Image 1 (spheres, rainbow, N blue to C red):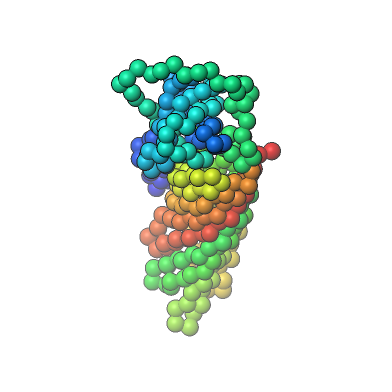
Image 2: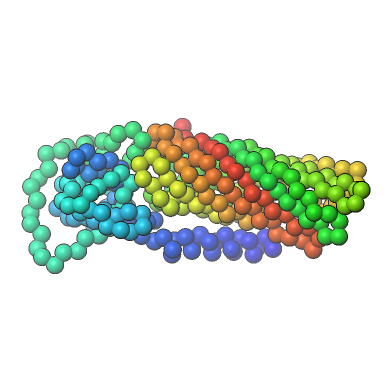
Length: 295
C-alpha cells in the first residue's frame, strides 16, 4: 500500500506540471511605478530575452492585460516600459511574436543596480528556502466494522521547510506531532481511542494565484505517521497491536499573505486520507495556521 501511495504522489507532482505549465514557467511583475514595470524572469526568458524585446503581461489564468518593452536587463531582473494595456504586481509574462521588424529602442537611463530595486513585500527579495511553524486543529471520523462509528478531533504542531523550485512551484516538508482523539458508543458500551503520532509530511506546493500580497496555493503529497503513544479506554474498539506506522495521502490548499519579502502568513485546510484496513477506516480534515520566514 505504501508503494502505491508513493506512486500516486509522484504522479500528482507530474500532473501539476502538465496542468499548469505556463504559470509554473513564467516571469512575474514584482513592482510597478507609473509606466515603469519591474519584472523577474524565469530561466528560459533569462536566456532568450534582451533589451528591446517585448513581453505580454497576463493574469494567472492567461488573459492578456498589457504589453511591455524591455529597457534594461541584468540576469533575470528587468526594467520594462508599459507600451499598452495595464500592468499590475503579480501578473505573469508571456512571449510576444511580431511579424514586423522591431524598432530600435532608446537606451534606458536607469543603472543596472536599479533593476534589482523593489519595495518591501515583493517576490524579488524572497529567498528560495524558507522555514516556518504551523498549528492545526480539525475533525476526525473512524469507523470500526461491527463495533462502532466514532468521531472526534485532531490537534497538531509542526515545523516546516519550504523550497521554491520555480516562482509558482515548490516542495514543502512538515514534521511534528499530530494527536487524534475519537469516541463512540454501541448500545451501552462506550469506546475511546487517542493516538499521538510523530508526523512527517512531504508535499508539492503550487501557487495557483498571486496578486500583490495575497495568494492562493494548493498542496498535495503523502504523510508518514508513526504512533508514539496511545490510549484505547477500558473497552477497546481497535486492538493495540494493530496501531502501526501509516502512510497516507494529503490534499489541501489555502490563502497566503506576504507580510514582507521574507515573511508570509498562511491559513488553509488539509484532507488526510488514511488507507483503510479490513476493519478500520479513518479520515481527517484539518484547518491550518502558520508562518514561514527566512533566517
